[in-house]
Length: 340
Image (cartoon, rainbow, N blue to C red):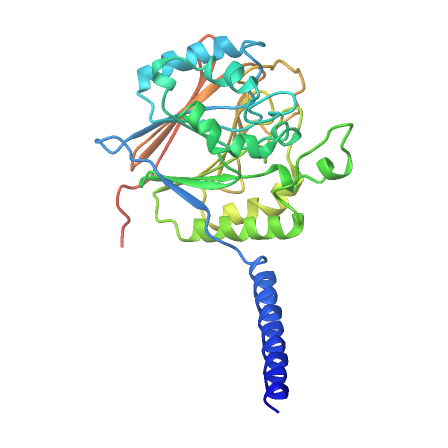
């Protein structure tokens, strides 16, 4: 009888354990479809409350296509402005990203190029479509940060400077053609599958972060164009899915690369300023589409970069060419304190 009772207890225990494991798996499955907070980095502004940043994109070509010359001028302007950090708008390593954390392209296209003292500040980088053609995890790896401490690249994240918040968004997985029309390229989608859940969660994360932001200035950074007269034009997937969230949450600027040019479009149907800084190396493509001149403030089909000087009450944007010449200046202001 005692033996029979022990067997019954064992069967019941196994049955209950099976139920608990099933419930656990259900919970895990449900939680994978929920949004989570984006990783946040604090970056203090200067003591006077101002912030200066430099933005460059589409650069990693081992110094070729004037990458070295652009880097030289970045260093000079960076020192003049006493920049606080650098933003990279993606396509960090051509043509096919990095092969791994030991790929010499990291040193040859980044560490050995951006050597000016003023550029030894933190770099905050997003991934571009060319980066997804290589080992994505390599660019995200802490190993690269140990090789060069100024490097930081994640899929999506936030940089909080108090007066401004920068929301970095992974735009490549939104674009359908990279999944349907690969054109002989191999993309590393290992970190974003299933795609639909990844994009849904990312949109929820961005929307939530923007809604909870109390920053005076909200700036979104992605690789792909939303408004562009360049070769790639507007990226319809993020215009449809991401732009409404930016409009709803009163975003001030969307900054991107992808088109290898310098560009400023001031939309007539929203206060968002669309800024392209994709002139870090290969440019001069010659593909320019007509754009409403009331919206197009700058289109420069060449190499260069941009800067932003930010205070509580004003943002000044400046675009520079490869020689350091100022191509375009634009500023906007807000009331220092809201009126009740």
